Amino acid sequence: MAIALTLRASGTESVDSVRPVTSVYGLEIGGANISCNYLSPLPYTGTGLAWYGGWGKAMKQHPRDLVMAFTAGLDLTRSGNPAKTTRMLGVGGRFGWGPSWRKTLAPGWELTLGGALDLSAHLLWLPVNGNNPVQAMAYTGIDLTAGLSWRTRFGRLPVTFADRASLPTAGVFFCPEYGEAYYEIYLGNHSNLAHFGWWGNCFGIDNHLTMTLHFRNRRSLALGYRLYVRTNHANNLTNQYVRNAFTVAIQIN
Image 1: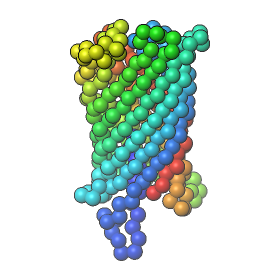
Image 2 (image 1 turned 90 degrees about the vertical axis):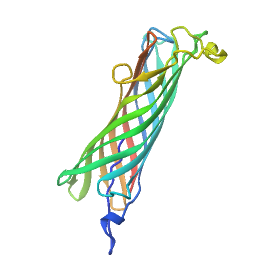
Image 3 (image 1 turned 120 degrees about the horizontal axis):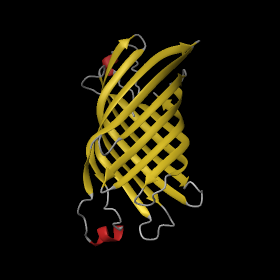
Image 4 (image 1 turned 180 degrees about the vertical axis):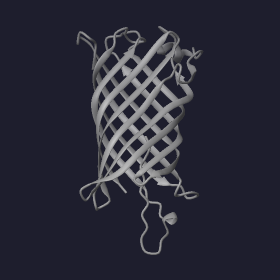
């Protein structure tokens, strides 16, 4: 997730010397779709709730062109099988950190491109599966990030429309063998657990559409929609985690 920054200067300060921290604190709620044939051959659907935050600042070396951002999130899901007879619970977290280059394309329009370190993990629990009731999804790697924003006005109120996305590109993900119990891993069977991930076997995307209303007290209200996808394929197993959510956040410049 990219962070939109606004540079301000006052008095005799130059724009290059002013590097305010932009903070975002948000909540999202929506639908969740989970497919994990390590736990069950059936897809599970339900709801997801997440908290997320982002902190960004212009870099000291090139404050007009480079932005450094840190993002974090925690999510909870509760889903059921098609017959609604069994529930699957999930908890996950994600962290991102990296720089972005930004360019003004036209008055009000800004493009950002960059990369970020991606650390993400999800834990899925199916209580009725006695032998292997838990599946872990973990990934570490590098994401490509991009964003496009347009700043305009509704009357006297400044408004920014933005679409910002991150795409996992190269990394390592965890996946056990089909039918392999975690107790076996605990006993020392560590072979074929780590796999190189790329777009062909480890696809993911975090796409966030927002409309941000900017108020005079340097506080902003951001409303939006997020599509969050994590998928990996290895050892004849497929794990897919998808959330579609409405988001609301407070932005502080």
